[in-house]
Each structure stands twice: as structure tokens, then as C-alpha cells.
Image (cartoon, rainbow, N blue to C red):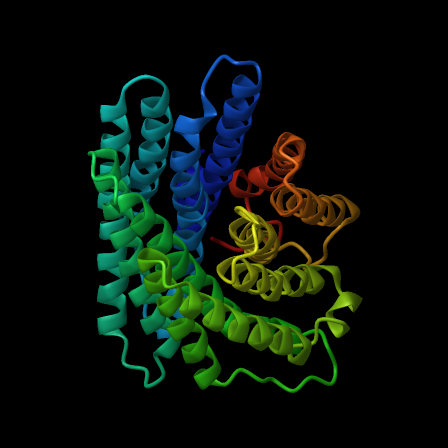
Length: 386
């Protein structure tokens, strides 16, 4: 366990992997218990909608940010607080789940602890950003803005647990469109062409900054439109973004990426974005799709991209070959199937598929965690430090 203190990504990824399994297990149990008439799932659904995005992804984001981020900024970072930050954020997640079952006050305490931990990490990133003297800071600056969006999302979630019912929609919109999606898009904009250029030959790197700013403005407009129920604006923006991401996926080399599994995993996850925005537009235009679009975003894009990206980073920073074996590849492909089942459950109004998808997700995530977790507890296979 001492190796977890060697580098930020070790601890954050370890706790993030445990949190993923814990939260998917909690949600699977909630669904199962509701089906057995032991609990009412209605009380769990609103919490599920904000705790899953705010619980699953942030720890991994911190692991990547404080590993790759200092290199982006060309600064030396000796983060002495990552142990406290990681343990605090993870503890907050556990308290929220316990509070949902036993004492609502613990939910507030949990979100409060998550907010404090995230604020601490955001402050440290702001200091690194200020210390950097490089001229090009667009990606790190966007990351800073999105981390502040995460603070607002956590604050809104805390307000909701304290009885401000209107804060629930605000928390959900902020979590997805002002926090997580901007971070995912920023990292994809920077890293997907970079990773692709190292595998696909010949390859022309294409990542114009106006494209990124277009995506970010679109996210902001969707956040506002969702809060105020401006459906025409929501439908229009989502339609334009669907076209943009379909074109970008083609331009970045989706088909060419299939020659390398680890690279294909990133591109296949990115392809979900056009599906999400198309479903989001259709829903805003009035088609009864339920939560199909949000699950296309949370499961189809974000969760599969998380598995793809964390696997690649974990292999690279442990000195392992950047190759996806049959086990990881099978798990990854089956995660797409599980996401399709969950989206289909909403599109075709087949609630039984929800339990099937949740069970499949829990099994697959359990297998992935079992494969990835030991990496953070062992020395690098190439003998290097870190």
C-alpha cells in the first residue's frame, strides 16, 4: 500500500477504481432491492443522477491532471496533499451512499467533504497555472474553468441535500455540461490527435482551437437551456454539435485507428458523442426518449472513455507495453453493449433492460478493476521510479 504514496496517479486511480466498483454495486443493489419491493427506487434515482457523475470521474480526473498537467505547464510539481485530497473525496462518496440508506444528514456531510477536497485540488491547480511561464495555456486554462464548474456542481448537490429542491437540476446540468464534458473534450482535443499520430502513418494532426471553443460554448448553452427549459435552443445547439462531432470523429481517423486496439478504444468512445447529441436534440424536439441521451453521454461516452484512457495511462506509467490484450479488449467491447442496452431501455421503454444493463456493467467493471488495480500496488515493470 505504500506505493500509493509514490505518485498522485497511483492513489487517485486506485481510489477511483474502488469508487467505480462501489457506486455501480450500490446502484445495482438499489435496482435489485426495488424489484424485490424492499426499497423504493424513486428516492434513489435523483441521487443516482448526480452522485454517479460526481463520484465516478473526479478522482480519475485528478490523477490525470496532477500527472500530465505539470508537463503541460512545464512546472515542477511536488504535490504533498494528494493523499489527504484523495482519501477525503473518496470518504465523501462513501458517506453519501451511507446517508442515502441511514441518515440524510450524512449525505450533506459527504457532499460537503467532496466539495472541500475538490476545492483544495482546484486551488493547487490554479497555483501551478499561475507559476507556469509557457505562452500556450489554453488547455490548462479550460481545465481550470471546468474544475471551478465542478465546485459549483458539488455546491449545488450539497444545497439539494439540504432541502433546496431546485438545486437538483442545476447540479446535474453543471456536473455534465460545465464540469465533466468540458474536461473530457479538452483532454480529447489535446491527446487524441497526439496518440493517433504515434500510431497511424501518415497522419496529419488536426485540432484547431476554434473547434474546442465551439464545443465549450455549446456546453454552456446546453447547461443554461436545460435549467430554464429552453427546448428550441437546446435542440438547435445539440443538433449542430452532433454534426460537429461526427465530422471530427471521421477527421481524427476513427476507421484508421482500428489497426491498434488501445487507440481504437479512445476513438470508439469518442464516436458516442455524435450519438449523444443526436439523441439529446431529438429529446429536446419532443421525442419521448426518457434518459436515453444522458446515458449515452454518461455510459456510452464517458464511462467507456474512462476505461480506455485510464488503461492507456496506467500501462504507460507502469512501464508496460501500450497494447490491449484480449481480456481488456473484450471487457471494453462488452461495455459498449451494456451502454447500448441501457440507452435502448429508454428509447424503447423497456425497463427490464435497465437491470440487465446494470448487472452487465457491474460484472464488467468488476473484471476491469481486478485487472487494473494491482498495477498501482506494484513497482514499475521497467524499474523506473513513479
